[in-house]
Length: 145
Image (cartoon, rainbow, N blue to C red; front, side, top):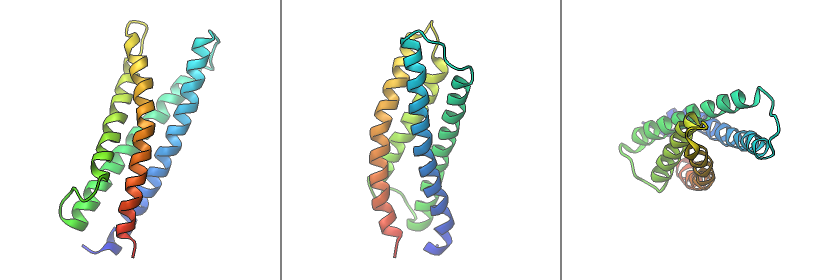
């Protein structure tokens, strides 16, 4: 296939990545709010936790969409995968995102390890997003005329 037929795919990927990063920032802010309210034994708004879950679910969906676009677009354009460091970086971000989402569902007083796993995974995810953004920029340069 030729690149022009893939432009719509790259646009979806660009928007998905931007929205994923925005969701990550919102999750960091709301997560920090919940963390500090818990540490200071303050009451948090009732809407905060469900909002955090909805944004988290949205980010997971966007990350899976990005994975799909990356695989389809790369195979469609090159015929195979593994042309850059973007693939392992992207797979790492997908894995970290899924571990984060799963650990969020495990958080409870009976499983204190889940909260620390969730928080530490999200801290590592920051680095993963940075790497996938940089490697993605290199990939985008290949497709631009």
